[in-house]
Image 1 (tube, one colour):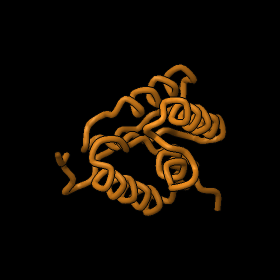
Image 2 (cartoon, helix red, strand yellow):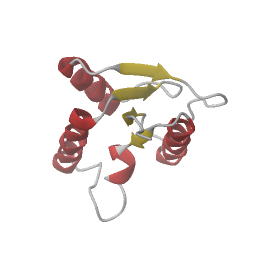
Image 3 (tube, helix red, strand yellow):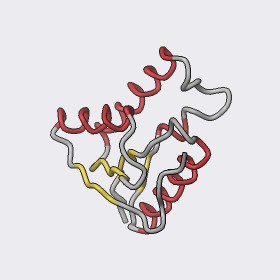
Image 4 (spheres, rainbow, N blue to C red):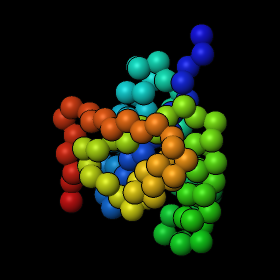
Length: 113
């Protein structure tokens, strides 16, 4: 059985602990839907990979993550916590490629300060 590969867009910056927990819930949601999700913002921001607070490294991570969109079937945007600048870049990139975008929400999630 082939699973559709989806690029997950959700916030990272700001309340990182809350946003990472949300992104993990988004990955779980994708898996329950039978998808194979990819979230570069969770992978590349791990210690020892790239530092999100260093603009050059952040941009490198964003661009590297964009490459996976070319082999994916859709971009899924999780909206409960709002739209970060990185998410907006991802959405614009998907739109420029004519890549399908689906907007989703998860029950029980809200932004935190």
